[in-house]
Length: 74
Image (tube, rainbow, N blue to C red; front, side, top):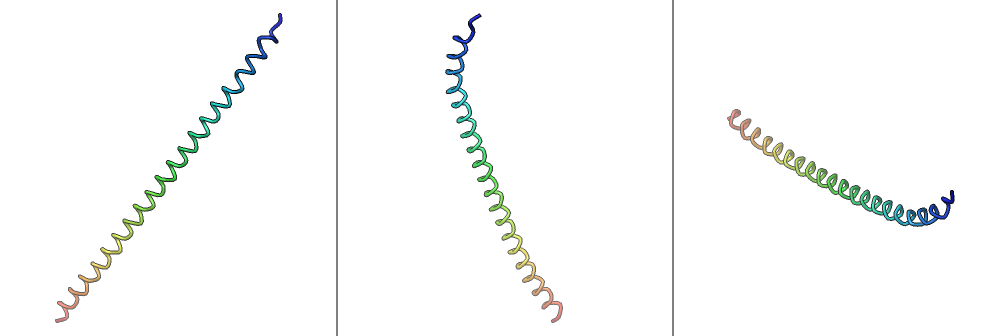
């Protein structure tokens, strides 16, 4: 029943494997976070673009309202 001589090499080999797996997970998580940050930035820019379009349409609407009001008053 001498398990200890087999257990020590097993533990010694498993430590680097665990370290590699954890390192890979950490890099994967960092990449996923960066991907999500970029998606968020893209969505914020799309919202900003839509807000700009809305402002342009509101200005155009005011312009046509003035034209209609001037035509009605004359």
